[in-house]
Length: 126
Image (cartoon, rainbow, N blue to C red; front, side):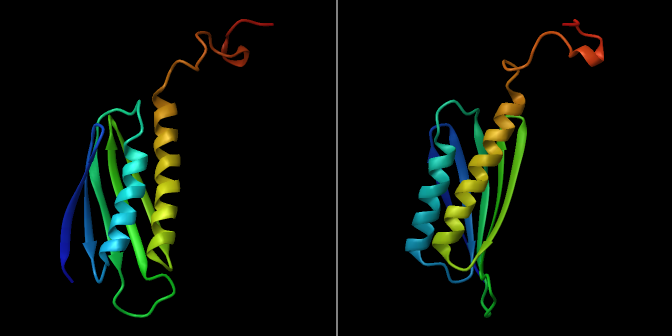
């Protein structure tokens, strides 16, 4: 098995894509496009990390696997996916990565929190 490093550089994002196994250029380009769409969204903190794409050499039900480890500001977002085809894998990775990054971004955003604690924690009674 060989590994190939390919960089995705977008708006404030530098992510390395590593491949193992027999990965076609078309599959790799589609994965890079899908991951780049998630990481290139405006309003995200500086992003770096790695996506590891693997195609199993033997016959299994889900030969395609991916692991994404993305450092988004102070948060580490880790996503795993396994699928039967490269396109399905890229789509699933895109959806999971977008969801986890959005959750991490909302968790850091304090604008939606109230200044006072809730009533059961000694806050104002209504």
